Every structure is written in structure tokens, then in C-alpha cells.
Image (tube, rainbow, N blue to C red; front, top):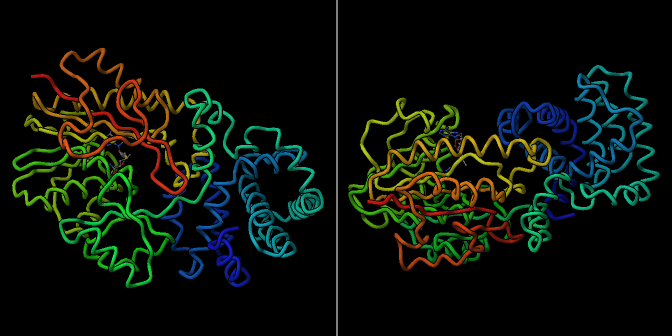
Length: 459
Ligand SMILES: C[S@@+](CC[C@H](N)C(=O)[O-])C[C@H]1O[C@@H](n2cnc3c(N)ncnc32)[C@H](O)[C@@H]1O
């Protein structure tokens, strides 16, 4: 158990109840595929008192992170799985098992709260069953886990199909991928170098007792030794710093904005990379770089707006399907394009552990088709001689090198160019080279899994 778990558990007796009830709603909705963990938490965070929010987060992230194990245990304990209409009871059971296995909650309290949760759901008929199941788990936990350890999903705490895919594509990296995907991710921040240098900002952090280390690959990245609330970061509200993984920070360094350029960020929300591009331009003193950000989802568009407002920048924001050029493109070509497509997010499972519950093998094929169409259409909007940076936070070659291979085979005016073509002094020896572009794997104390490939339109 890490320090965070212990802190949470120390106030468990006062905060558990309401946080637990809301956690049941969040987990039920995730199991019913009614939204991701982040959207569900954003929607329901207000349902608990603010001092209970960390507990809610810990329960929801914890159940998702440990889902493959908890699910196998629950199915082993139940004579018959719950019907779909009783998915809320299944969420109650998963939460109970999570508390018993991973938290300091006293066993009797975890069992009582689980039983009480059935009553709150007005499903009193399930109280006896829930009590019996958890009591059996208390007695037989070691034996049950030993039996289930033979299952890859339990051994690796990852859905079996994902373990198979990782093993097929990256056998030499399997252990590290699994290890990094199962941990709490480090908190990485991006210093706004147009306002303050990384060294000066690090000194300011140190003055506040916040220890941080430089990122190795992005010279704007700092890893905090212990996560803090953003409000504790000096100058956060004034745009001095943003929370962004180091691998994600590489895109602005690769694209290296120049004066007079017209740049498109084609799948932009929540605007992390949009903001970084604007920061880069500002720190280079560029006065006439123009940035257009396109995003499909209106509610995610709002996130770009609030991020840019905090940073004090503006861009042309368009809410549209990037692959539907008639809907948004005025016919003016772009010099550079960042195409950070929607993907399986298999490089960032530790930040989105609900992927372990909801992601299915068929999603890869569906996303490959969507990515292919966006890439094909957006390419039209690129100037001759212009550059397009294709990016995903996926570890699936189908979405990455194979996607680019297919594109190059069908697009005669496209060619791959080195990732430092636009910034020759920028070192790009991160991750590993693959047939096209570079693949980064998630690192336990370092960057997330990512993929980059830089393309140029022939003149
Ligand atoms: C990987 S995220 C982008 C992250 C963003 N670049 C950042 O750094 O903050 C992909 C985004 O593409 C959006 N999206 C999905 N399909 C799209 C489409 N057809 N056109 C435009 N945006 C799309 C999603 O809503 C999502 O916000």
C-alpha cells in the first residue's frame, strides 16, 4: 500500500459512506459503458463533499486499476453472475473486494458497508448473498488468489486480450509495459518557458518544499516526486505551468513553430498540445504564427477554451469533424499540422485504467478506420512542402506504424522525414525506432506510451 492509500484509509471511517455510494454509481456506469472514468468522475465529483473527493477518486481508480483481478475473484465467488439490471450490485461487490484487498478499511467495516450499500440500492434481497460472498473471501482469499493466478488476466492484472497483443507486438518489452501500466502515473508538469525557465521554476518549487526532477527528453518537463494539487503549483492560475506528460510534450518540440506559419491542431481537446504550441511560439517571440484548433466534441471544446484562457493565449477554435472538410476548412492551406488522433490509449492505461474494463479488440479496427479517414482528409489541407506530425498514445502498431505504412502506400505526395527535421538540435532518440516513426513505451517513473511519425508533403 502506498502513502496515498494510507492517507485515504486514515480518514476512511468518516468519509467512506458517501464516497462509496457515489463510487457505486460511477463504477456501475463504467461497467454499463456509459462513459469513461474521467467523464464519470467529472460528472459525479460534486455529489460528495470536497473532503471526500480523494476517497471517491481512490475507490474508482482503484477498482478500475485492479479490475481484472477483482472481476476474476468476484466471478469465482458468485454461483451465477448478476443480471445486467443488477450491475449496480456487481459494482458494490467489486468495491467491497477492493476495500478488503487493497485498503486499510477494517474487514468488518468493508463487509458492513457492502451489505448496507445493497439496502441503499433498495435491493435488500442481495444482503445475505453479499455478506456470504465477502465472508467466504475473507476466509479463503489466499487459496482463491492462488487458484486464479494461473489466469493471465489475474497474473498480469490486465485483460487477457491485451496481454496477448502486447506480447505479440512487444515481447521484449512486455514486462515493463505491464508494470508501468499498472502503477500510479508520475505527475509531470510543463513549464511555460515564455514566462519562466525550468530551472527558475524548479527553484520556486523547492522553496515550497516540492521536489522535482528534470525530464530527460522535453526541456520543459519536470517530474514531481510526489503529486500535489494544481492549486499548490506556483503561478498555475496564471499559466506558468500545466500538467502534461513528457511524451505528449515532445510534439511541440518536434513541430517547432516559426514566424508567419499557419498551424493546425486537428484533434485538439483538451488543448494540452495547443497550449504548448502557443507557449513555444511566445517564448521564441513569434508574433505572426496563426493556430487553428479543431475538435469534434463540444464539451471537450470548452476544455480547450478554459486551458487557453488560463494560459492567456487565443487561437481559432472550430468545433467540427476534422475529416469533414466542407464543415470547417476555408481552403487556406496549413504549413504544419499536428494530428493527435483518437486512439485506443493503450500507452496511457495507468492514467485511464477504465480501459481495462471497456476497451475491446474490435475498438482497434474501428479506430484505425477513423484515424485513416481523418489523416487522409486533413492531408488535403497541408501546403506543399508542409509537415504533418501524426501522434497517438497507443502501443498498437495497427494505429501507428501500420497506419502510416498504409497511408504512404496510397498517398504519392507523402514521405516520412526524420523527427528532428524542423528542429535539428532537438534530440529524438527516445523510445525505439519502428518501421515508420518512433514508439515510446510507458515507463514506471517516466513518460507515457506514445507514437510519433513526421510526414512531409512533396512539392
Ligand atoms: C488524443 S485526444 C487529443 C489530445 C490533445 N491533442 C491534447 O494534447 O490535449 C483526441 C481528440 O480528438 C477528438 N476527435 C475525435 N474524432 C475527431 C474528429 N473526427 N475530428 C476532430 N476531433 C476528433 C476527440 O474528441 C479528442 O478530444
